[in-house]
Image: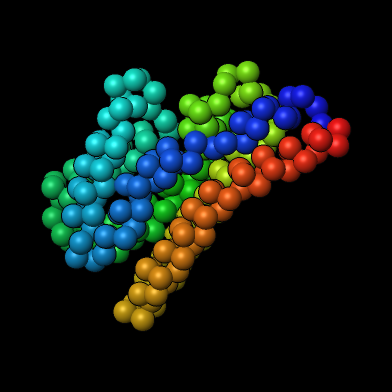
Length: 204
């Protein structure tokens, strides 16, 4: 294997703890939001975004996922204060689906530029490894997985709206299962890639 792909066993890292913190406000919103609780969910997620992202704000290193979260939850919270319930009926109905669609768009859209997971990984990996094919490929896979998960959650959210009270499992159980699987994959995949790179390096 080429030296650029070996990267001292560090390049495949994806800044896992940072990614999980970046997703925390979105997960809080998805879990708490409901027909009667979405306003509380938006405010809670906004506060979580501000608190969790404070270190990055101080360093001037905010990431696309963090900025999107603060803007999205601030907008939702402001709309909740300014508009009456009748005007917000659509938001009350589709709040979770909208949040999932936004984060899916951000994740998948970042593949055209810098995969959003790479922004976190760069904080843990030396600059000389950032252009490693192994490093880039690992983060493209992780970003695509998270984007796909939130696309599925958005679709299940739409199905839950159509199913009414019988769709609670689509709006709660399925998203939780998908998120748990995504978290486990994010924890497993970089180590798997790193082990494969070491094995190939011994043969090369």
